[in-house]
Image (cartoon, rainbow, N blue to C red):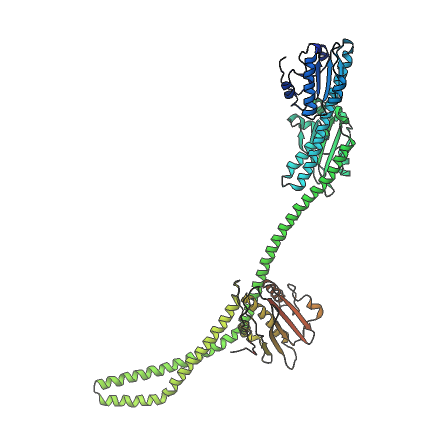
Length: 615
C-alpha cells in the first residue's frame, strides 16, 4: 500500500492491507492516516496530534510489522500516552498476553461483523480520550507559559504590553476560550475595547454589544469590585448570540481576569468559553490562575512603583539642579549686596586721598605759574646777554632775584616733592582699596589654591575698615598651620560675613572693652577658624534658626536674612562646616572647619599675628 501523507488526524491505521477495515472505517467520523512500512509509521508519528494507532494483524508478517511499531513507540519514543489498538481477524490470534506485558496495548479488537458496533465505539472512545490528553497537554503548556510570562515580567526588560499579551494568550489556552478580549478601565469606570480575538472586523461590534460597552454588565462589575478572577456561566445567552454565530460555536461560560494595580482595576481580560469546553477548566487550574493573579498584581505594582520612583528621581534631580543654581545665585546676590555695602563704606576711604590729591593739584597749578614766570625771566636774561645789552641784562638779573625772593622758590621746590609723594601715596591707597574690593567681588574661581589665611583676613579687615568703630579692638591670633588648598574666594566671603556680623553686633551697645577675636587652630586634619565677639550674643531659640534662609534678628530693612545661610552653604561647598556657640550677654562665636584634602603636602606657612590692620 502506498504511504499517505501525515495530517492532523488523531487516528493512524497501520496495515499491509486495509480491506478488513473498510467496513469499520466507514462507520467512523474521523479522518485517518494509513501507513504500511516502519519508515511510514515513524513519519506519521511525528505529528503529535496523532495519538490512536490501530494495528491490523491478520498474519505473521503483519504481526511482525505491528511489533516493530509497538517497540518504536513504547521504547524508542518512550511514549506511554499514545493509545495502541490491535485489530485482528477472527482466524488469527496474536500473542496478546506478551504484547500487553511488553508494550502496554490498550485494546484488542476482533474484526467480526457482530462486534463492529462495539469496535467502533471503542475506537471513538480512544479518540476522545486522546483529544482530552492533547487538550490537557495544551493546558499544562499554557500553565507553564502563564507562569513563565509572570517570571519574565519580574525579570525581563521586555515591553510590558508584549508581556501582557503573552500572558493573555496563555490564559486563553488554559480556559480553552473560543474568543477573548482586553478591556481598558478608565478612572471614571468607563470601559474601552482594547483588543479582541478573533481579530476580524465584524467581531468588533459583536464584542461591544455582548459586553455592553462603554458601561459594564453586572458580572464584569463584580470583577471590578472584588479585584479577583471570576469564572461562571454567561448570564444572558442572547447578548452573545451574534458572536456565537460568527464563531460557529455556542458560548456558555466566561473567565474574567482583572489587572489590579494598587487596588484599582486598570484592565479586564475576558475569555468566552464554548459549551463543549465547559468542563475543561479544573479546580487546580483555577488555583493556578488565582496564584498568577496575585503574583501579577504584585509585579505590576512593583513596575508602577519603579516608574513612579524614576519620575520622582528625575523630579528630585531637576529640583536639586535648580536648588544648586538658586544657592549659587543667592551666594552671588549676597556677595554683590556685601560688595555694595562695602563700596558705600569705603567711598569715604577713597574720597579722603582723592580730596587731598585734588587739593594738591590747586597748589601745583600755582607753583607751575611761578615756575613758568621764572623760566620766562631766565630766557629774557639769556637773550640780553647774547645781544650784549648790559643794562637790560642787569635789570633782568635784579628782577629775577626779586621774583625768586617773592615766590620763595626753595619752598616751592620742596613742597612740589612733598605734594607728589603725598599724591602718590593717596592714589596707591585708592588702588589697594579697589584691588581688595575686586579680589572679593571676583572670588569665584573654583580652582583650589593655597590659602594665605593671614592675607585673606588682612584684606577683609581693610575692606571693613570704614565699619570698624574706633573703640572696637580686633585681635588676630593665627596658629602655624600647613597650607590648605581650597577656594580662597569662598573663605574670604565667609570671613567677611562673619566679621561684618560681629561688628554689627557691637554697634550701639554699652561695653567698656568691645573686641573681636579672629583665631585659628589645627586639630588632626582639620583647620578651625573662629570669629568671636563679646557682644550681646544670640538667644537660644534663635540659635537653631540662624542658618535658615531669610531668617534675621535685625530690624526690618537692616538685613536680608541670607548672609549666614549663604555662609553655611559656602562652608558645605568647601567640604567643611560652620557652627555657632553663644551665651546671651557674654559672647558669640562662629567657627569654620575646613578639612585638609587627602595626600595634601604639609607645608608650614601661616604665622601668629595681632591687629593686622594697616592704612
